[in-house]
Image 1 (cartoon, rainbow, N blue to C red):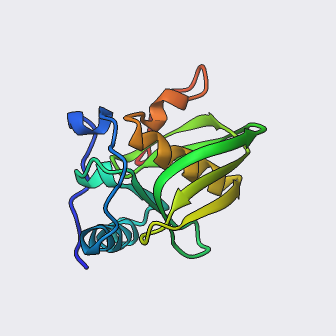
Image 2: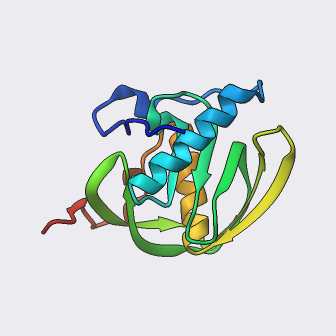
Length: 155
């Protein structure tokens, strides 16, 4: 495993749509392992492959319940609404209050290509939505609550 550089705001790759994973091989496993190591090193709860400069539909998430690896994830159901603080490893030290679904269900493949269904509520729902948005070139700033602004965590 290796730490990867996290792409930051201003890099045009963050606005590109990621491609579906078709090959489930050792290169994919290495990418996933590196992403998890990078996420933990940066104290994040999620990381999308595009954030390490790879335009593949791969996400890792850990909200404190252990890592979840998502390949080609899709949201299949959402309900409710939550407004809460949100930040991003690609916008270091920045946060804002956002509006997201309270509960989501997603389907995704694992590193071997097997499909799974996951349900997330509250923080997990927000993390799923945040990281899947990255795969479509969308940043959390698109979900900032009306009247809110991006804040610096140092102030």
